[in-house]
Length: 308
Image: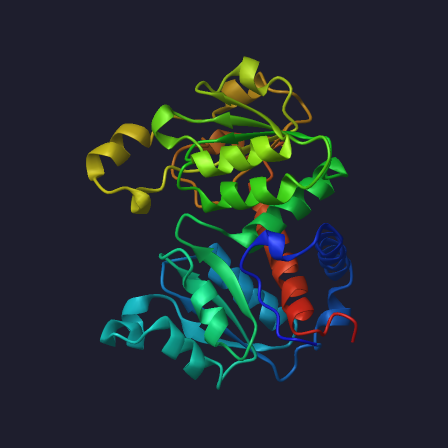
């Protein structure tokens, strides 16, 4: 098979996406059948930005498949601190590993790596641009909860300007029929113009609102909460002013539909109160588990091992 990378969720067709999600579901149900399929294979995790879920999820995925992991958790413990370029780093890592997951604060850095790599590269998040494996995780979670990925009304709340998870999810779900978005954010953190322009061009229905309340949530199938990301702000004052703009608590959730599920890519700060965690509609920790199966499926797909 020709070398293939994953930079965006759109790198997979709708049919390929559905196949990958089916594989992830099968892995959850038949873990033992996949326990040694990556024996002798190595995953490199190159994380230039801090991460808990994504990095550990990739590593857990590879170990569940029988493979091994190597890499670094931040740029200051690698040769990046000595000035090594992304291109040179991936050339070196290609000598050690069979596949690589890369997170980088600069948009497009994983794409640059993919141009110089002799192994598959997975974009594990690049700045405020894309986060394709989180999107696949979100889509698996939504499909498992609602039974479909079409004809859904999805509320996206919080930091829509810098939220790469939001940008990726919109791009991927926009390929399905009957999708509507409710964009809930303050003026300063609205979805970038190029994203809304793309939605209008595709005829995707959306509305932009400021308030998160009963009226906004009344018709939603999914409420996707996001944190205000301190690391994306240029000054502390703007972050402090925006960080508590939205808080979903039990009182607000009580006014929402009984079949509206709450998702969050995590980590949360205080945008979802802990008293929401016990509500059966709170499914963000289910998302975390689903992320392992999605990344297992993706590793096998890019290594062309899913049928073996």
